[in-house]
Image (cartoon, rainbow, N blue to C red; front, side, top):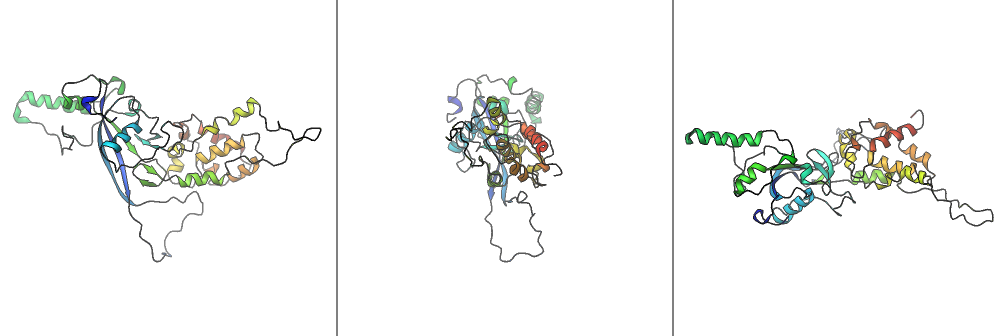
Length: 342
């Protein structure tokens, strides 16, 4: 990702990253609380911090491979173009969930999203010349004769004509770098994860999601009473599970709390009072564990109006889970387990 276009082998393409950037504004201390100001909601799940600051869209031009990930592209920008760009990542292999963002309007992980899967052929916000600077517009040169005019019209049509997708892109090695860039330019739009306050650029504040998960006690709660055998010895096999019991929660235990499901949820991302699908999935993991003895308490904890009752069964939370969890189905199962009358 750090090589120049001339050093790249056959198959590289020109990519434009459109990044929604954000710089927070320093908060000023308030001397006195306004008694007529709107009071914060009573639900702890409705208290969303709204950061104020400057927001803008910035474009970065790269030469990349189709198999490169979007995280690779951002790292190239960070190292070689703009060290001020802020984004978060850790393992880089889809195991930690720290790099969840919105790519082309869809919440997903940077490290698992490839250029081939997400790059789109699109008209750029601003045309650029060979030096990389933005042009203010493109005009037809009518004084150069009909031939030149037709050539420029054909060039503009190539930018605006609908594309069949990335697979139909011609990635042959061109002699003219400028023509190569204009013919094969692809675009990826990046923005922070929806539904969360933005700290800086692509970094979302997920503290509230983690607090919601912690509130539901994401750990085994056993009675503490040791089972014994007939001769009075401690039964060492009391917590053994059958394959069927393990299957009930095994996939749910793979949740990495990345926030993709919450960013996809129209209720949570819309700012409504809702505990969120991430906390509910992890709660369901322990409800389905035969070793846990707190099922009734766990169901009571999510039976309030801002708990599972706030779920609208849209099932958008299931579409892009990086671990393949059918989040919407788990939400429906919790609705069925909810105590009657609540």
